[in-house]
Length: 594
Image 1 (cartoon, one colour):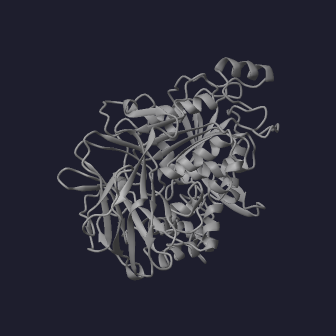
Image 2 (cartoon, helix red, strand yellow):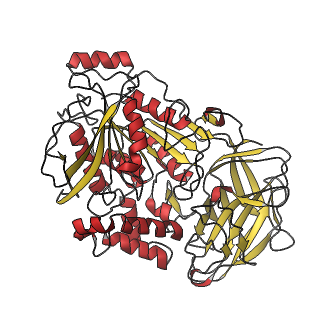
Image 3 (cartoon, one colour):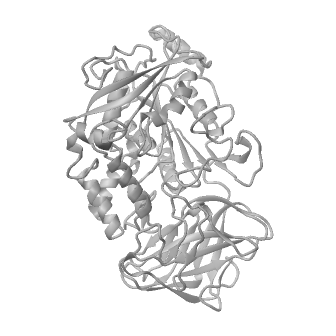
C-alpha cells in the first residue's frame, strides 16, 4: 500500500515487483475517448441488475508496458457523464486514464436513485473499478450489451489493496467530483479497499442534517437527536431533477423506475413527503438518510481525503466538512480541507476553479487537486498543500487565487465571547463584550401557523439574487454590536447559548448579518440555522453555520432570531416565543483578528 512515497521510491518498488512503470508526470497532447456501457449488479446481495453509461478517456502513448493511474468521476445531482467532460479531458492531458460515468438514475444509467447509498451506488462504482483493473464481462461497446469491450490493460496496478489483499484486478485509482459526485466517493471507499484516494467537493456528512438541519440537540458531528426544519426549496428542486432526469426514453427503456415512486425508492418519496408536510423527518426517514451518509460509516474510510467545501453553500455548509474532517483525522486518516468561496449558492472567485476550463496553473483548487492526485496516485514527491486553507474575500489579488487563501490547521485563531443584552424596545438589543453588563429582558416573536411565511426575499439557493427582503413585524428580534473600530475576522463555526420561553418544541431561525454604516444588512452567504428546541425550559446550545467573513471598520455584527424563513418548512403550530437576554446568554465567535 502506498502512503507518502516519493517518485524514486515508487519506481524502485514497481521495478522490484516486475510491474509496469507509471506514465510520466508531463502533460500529454492528445487522448482518445470511447463511450462504454456497463452491466453491474447492486444491493447488499448484488441481486439487482443495472446498466451504467460512461466515457473512457485514454491518454496517448499508453500500453501494457507504459501504464498510468486512473481517476473515476461521476455527476452531481441531475447531471450525467457529459457534465464531467471538462475535468475528465483535463485529467487525461495530465496523464490519467479517466472514466466519467452517469450515476444510477441519471444521464442514461438505469435503476432508481438511492442517494449514494454504499450498498447500491458504492457497489456499482466498485464494479467500474473492476473494469479499470482489467476485468472483462463488465463493459460493452453497445447499449444492448452485446459487444464486450476488451480488457483495459493500460492502468497501473497495485501489489495489494488497502486491506492488504493481493488482487489481479487492483488498479491505482482515485475519485474526484462534487456534491452528489462527492458523496459517491465516500460510499465507494467504504465498500472497496482498492480505491486509493478521494477528492470530494461540496458534499455532505449527514443528509438528515443537510435537508432538515437543527442547530441544537447535536450528539455527533452535525447529527442531531431532533430533526430540524426541512429545506423545501432544495428538496423540491432535487425531487423534480430526479423525477424528470430519465425523460420519456429513460422510463420506456426501464419501466420499473416509473412506479411506485418515479426514479426514487418508496422510502425516499415518503421522506420527501414528510419534509414537505410536517417540516421534519420521522426517525425512519432520518435513519434512511443517514444510511446514505458518511457519518454512519466513517470508520470504513481509510484512504487519504482532500475535502473541498464552499463558504457560499446553503445546502451542504462548512459544518458538514468539519464533521467529516475531524472524524477522519481522529482516526489518523490523512485528511486535508479547503474552504473555497463557491458552493451550491454562489460561484467561484477568479482564480479558484473554472468548471468549464480547469487549469492547475491558473486555478488554486485545480492545482491543489492535481498535486494531491500526483502525490497519492503517481507517487510524485510534490507538496500537497496545507492541512487547512480558507478563502478570504477581503484580500486583493490578481490571477490565481493563492494569495487570498490563508494556510493553517483547523480550528484557527481564538474565540471571543459576547452577551445578548436587552434593549428598551423589542428589536433594539445589543451584543456586548463578555465582561460588560448585559441587561436582562425578553423579546417575544411570533411563529407562523401551519408553516406560513413570515418574510419574502431571496431563497436560499440563490441568496445573492438581489431581491428585496421584507419581514413581517413581530416575527423577529435582533441584537447588534457597536460599530467596529477595527476589522473583525470570523473564521469557523459560531455558537450561542440561548434561553427561550414557549410551549412544545418551538422552531425559530438564527441568522448573522453584516450591517453597513448606511444601515443596510447583508445576511452572510445566505446562511440560516433552524433551531428546533426539544425542551424550552432548559438553556439551548446552538451551533450556527460556519463562515469566513470580515466585519469592516464601521460595520456591525447582527444576530437575528426569526419565527420563520421562506426557504424552510416552518412549524405547524404558530405561537409566541420569547427569547431571553441577559448574563446567562452568549455568542461565541472564532476569530483571527479583532
